[in-house]
Length: 335
Image (tube, rainbow, N blue to C red; front, side, top):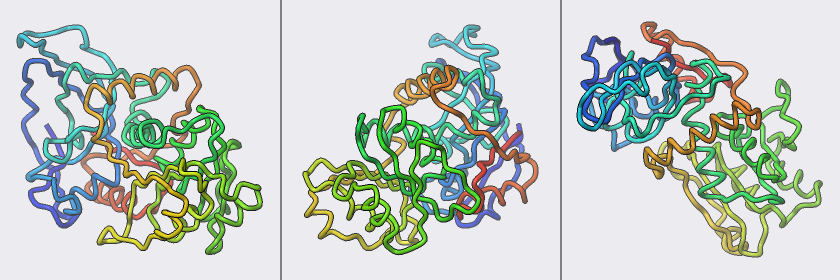
């Protein structure tokens, strides 16, 4: 089968199109023909060597949408139950310490299979699994957003931020979202937009809304110190404020943090890590997301950019775009 592969980390130029063997199924596994594989920042980071736990040689890619073409039960005999099923998936160590989804096929544990939303095509489904899993962990597992909470999302336009906004809306929270510019953006009606046009744009917008010291949750999906420190200034000082951070874009992973404000407000800080959920937990989340998308409670992407697996320049361009946030349309690799 055709697959993208890198022998060593350090440069996107180390990624090449190779002919490799199809995965050999073990008992309890299914073979999925990939129709679309989402491009994520962690895919680019893996190739560039920014993630020290990545092993090589490696096929990158974490997300996928496709159909099951083979399956073996626990006894190692052919199983027909899932054959032909359209499935989607993400997470685990796929793309890091085991081969990923920038290929024509991938092996998946049968117990972890999740049927993709019937209302989404493969490209749209394949573009959203990791961002939505991260958003779910952020909103549900870490921040425990509740009805009536006041929430600030830094980076509300991005994949995780926009998904988190939908999940917060579903829970009955009031949402403020930051945008670097509102010139070409129409935020959804359930988000009060904050344009980051000045140093204290967030605290000024929250004060204008009469909510200074009343922000319950801060979700930082962008990873820059200025808006982060501006936002924690607005949070509740009663010890119930929750802060979740999932990105730091300084090369050394460090940015200055206003600890005086943080401790005087008795805030709680948590870091989002997608692998804190195991395969069965990820399946449960994806099953619930598929149900809610098909029922209209949640909305999938309106637009996706398809990138041919064989077009190396386009693939590298998509990885560079997601790394530098140069595009607001998510890309998928299409075998």
